[in-house]
Image 1 (spheres, rainbow, N blue to C red):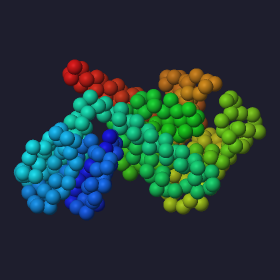
Image 2 (image 1 turned 135 degrees about the vertical axis):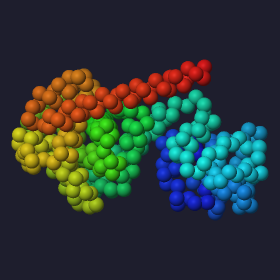
Image 3 (image 1 turned 90 degrees about the vertical axis):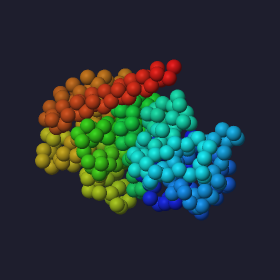
Image 4 (image 1 turned 180 degrees about the vertical axis):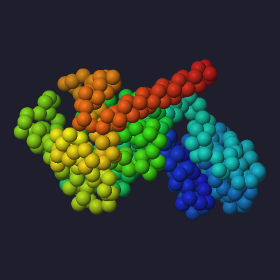
Length: 364
């Protein structure tokens, strides 16, 4: 699905563009755009943010493509109570310019595809972006560098997917992934984003933790594939090799530059235990900061619930019980908070699914 955002202020519409991209491909066009060239790939709908009663607007709107006698669905944003002959006869809806972007795009898609499952569309688009970010991250890390902008492009899709579809919907999609390492990174990222959401972290802190979750295992890009993808328990020698991945990942991020201390610390220390039995540095107690402790809980839980060809996943109840049996190795209060966060995230998924079913039932 392709949506055009037609505006006199293209640079000021990043937030609206991001909202559109949750559900469709977005093309931003301004007064100098080549509408004829853009229309070679016709849009399914428009969002028009213009002062409507001007010759310039009439000229731009006259350039919008049409679909025969059937107008292409459009939403027009207004800053005053205004109408315009320029849009007379169009299939149009007017909204105040300050309307929440999510409301605008949902209203437009309701015109384009009345039967669309919006949370599912958002979830699958977010998953596809995250998956591609991981694939590119692995390629870059294998040669020892990692672009910060690449990683940052994967943060919002994870946060958006958890917010729009809930945790269990994200997990169901991730479990279908056939690459075990990607599956694990996507699980940890979604679990961390959900944990931050349920703890009511600020947007900035949620993004920092999700960034750390995306890159926490990046050192595995330099672990031999016969060890990384071994379908079964590792030998002691193989385990020694595997246990170097936190140091390797930390080195990659340091050499890449621009990664904040929190992300570096989580990447290096997410396998440290509070009793000093972890690796690579044998840290203990107050040497391990709370964000590291938080992500460690997500990481262990993800490893337990992963779906592999050679083992059945651990259930949520059993995985939480395993975490609790670890006692003083991990932060008990975070385990309790995490269990509540997973339950809350799953309930959100059920609520969203129920709302969609209700909408579909009402349309039948």
